[in-house]
Length: 225
Image (cartoon, rainbow, N blue to C red; front, side, top):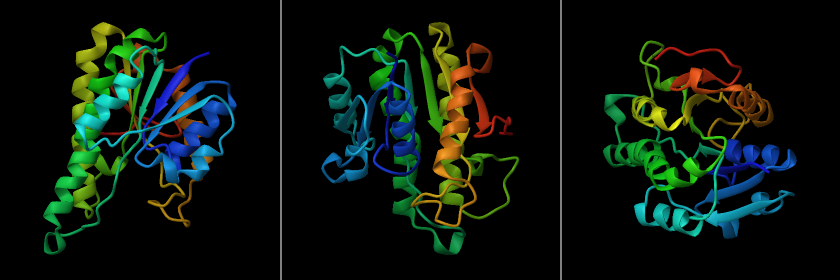
């Protein structure tokens, strides 16, 4: 039975990853900030292990990894993220910007670092980052510079790590999940969480080292940096 670890697992895209992998018979390690209030997550059937992680807190990340030190992880999905609003120079929330950078860039790096030994033990050896095409510089249409810059930074950090981990035969992938019907995306978004996650799972399943370090749309289309 393969094992997947998912951060930000209590709602939205992360919760849908949990549901789909659990339904397919995977062992799922579902990590979130507040498991006690994650009622939808607790309701998922299957072999689902729920635990606490705060990706902004290195001690929390290391504690989560230590509790799973004997576990082999085939697939790690860095999904936890936030979106601090701020579109123009006139309305910049600098403290919020720093929080956005911390959660969306440093958070996934903390997780990757702490769980690398578990990934190396796994047979799958795949490391996934839920990014956004809003992090694409060449596809920039303006606005949202706080969120955009955090996802651009994530893409660069993940790309560097993909190169660093390639000798270990670890495949790293970055995804734009689409504009998804979640708390962040809103109910009017055109893509359901089910369709987004189903598409990404198909790409993940077929990916190998030939796809290492690439940036994909949820439907499999390659995205520009």
